[in-house]
Image (cartoon, rainbow, N blue to C red):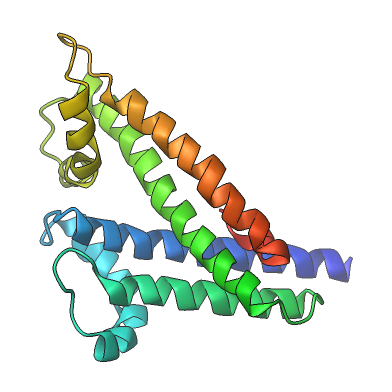
Length: 197
């Protein structure tokens, strides 16, 4: 009974950490896609993640261009430390450092792909029910997905009212998730068990 409670507790901790990694990667992608910084949702994401990111900003410096290295480093370190601690507490001992590093990279890639996956679903639903929506959340989703949709639209233009580009992007996300994240997760060994939400 005690071990079941313990493993349920570790599972909960891992899930909460993965949710926080999700928020950190959302912050990273909002910056990379040049989404509206003053949007209330952007501000909330920054506020929640800033305490963890601030120490990394002190030595990695402010954001250079589109890519926020401090946020990436924060996500990597938090995930790596959590993998080490959870595996130690669960009784697996010290995980190989290479496995921890690969597991952390897999978790970051997994979070990025999930964000784009959910954002695309929201974008598709919005295009049906409220194509001219001006809600801060709707605007943010559009700004987030546009950098990955625009290149696909240039190759596959809309057929009248039907835009096939989201289908192509969904397929690409599934392939990257299956091949890249799947390979990283397997390569991480025991640490790979803690990758996804």
